[in-house]
Length: 101
Image 1 (tube, rainbow, N blue to C red):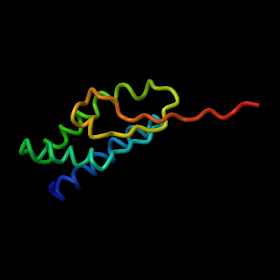
Image 2 (image 1 turned 90 degrees about the vertical axis):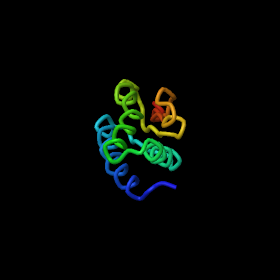
Image 3 (image 1 turned 120 degrees about the vertical axis):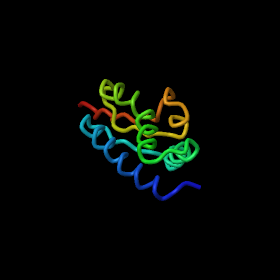
Image 4 (image 1 turned 90 degrees about the horizontal axis):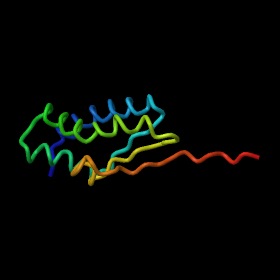
């Protein structure tokens, strides 16, 4: 099981990423199992807050470059698969176009 310390640190850092994505009009979500996988990676590597930050950045770096160019993107959900392999695609949700009369 993962430590409350890791949850608190990751929550703070996740909020920073959510604010960054919100600047592009995109809502960022993390599945609970993805957060658990991030914490477990940190525990397995024996790292503290800086190491946890590095793990999150490794997961988020590809998305920081690709998300702004996705037209109509509404939200991104980080899954456990993305945490385990940052080259995997997260779940993308796009805005529905309103019907034009």
